[in-house]
Structures are given as C-alpha cells and as structure tokens.
Amino acid sequence: EEVAVELPSLFDNEIPAAEASAAPRPASRPIRQYNIAGWGGRNPRQFLEEHLRKRLWGKNAPSEVTKYERVQGSCPGRFRVRVTASLPRGGGSKTFDPEEACETVNDANNLAAAWALFKLLEEADRDGTRRNMPPAYRDRWREWTE
Image (cartoon, rainbow, N blue to C red; front, side):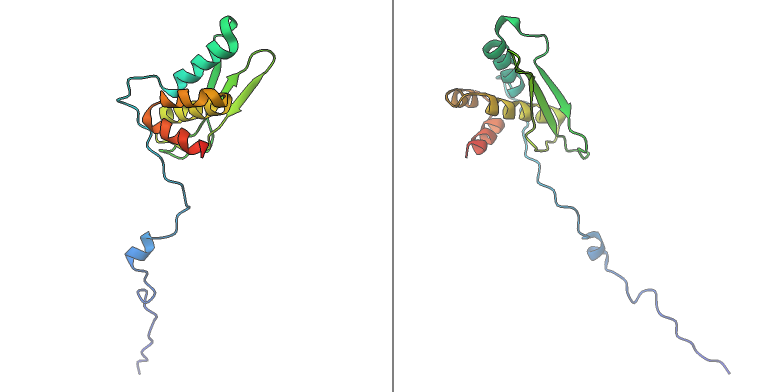
C-alpha cells in the first residue's frame, strides 16, 4: 500500500522578482550637479586662496594657506571634502565642512571652498563674491543665506 505524502512546495512562498528588487535601501540625499566645465571665470577654490592670501595674510602668506581632505566614509560616486584654512596673527587654523556629497572630488573641493568663504567673509563682501562665482555655486550660496 502506497501512502501519498504531500510535501510543501518550494514555490508556495515565492516572492515576485519585482518585490525582491524593491527591498528598502538606506535613504540618501540626491547629489546636486556642480559641473563647471564650461566656466571661464575663477572657481571657489581660487576665490578662497585669494581671500586668504591678499585680505588676511598680506605679504607674509605661507606657501600653503588651505588644505583639502576627503571625509572618510564617502560612498563610491559620492565625495565629501573639508577644507582647513590657516589664519594669521595666531589665529591657528579653522576647518570648514559643508556636509554635502558631490559627484566628483573637484566639485567637493569647490563646495568646501565656497562654504569656507561664506563663513569667513564679512556680510558686506559676501554679495560681490557670490556674484562672481560659477552659477551652480552662486545658487547654493543663495540657499545658505536663506
């Protein structure tokens, strides 16, 4: 006498492929586009360098007034940079981190420089500097003032 034993099917609890690929992913902020490839003017890094050398240090400026370093933990395709500015007259150094990821290291360097300028400049000087920046950084600067 044969007894039929019904085994549970492997396919009864199958998850459809569309649901499996839609597994929750950690939320991340979208990356803003800062591409300044066609820009003919000065970039934020040049503005920061000039401000530190000419306005703060004067003739006694050291060879290196800024230092850019990548923030650890940056994901692939997402770069964060912080800039350390050397200040004169015993001011030591000050670090600026915009806490925003960019697509390229160059964009992240420029964003960090723009943030440092935003924090270092007097209120009266901010508007003139902002107007001379590349459009993407000019727009970001405007958002910081709001």
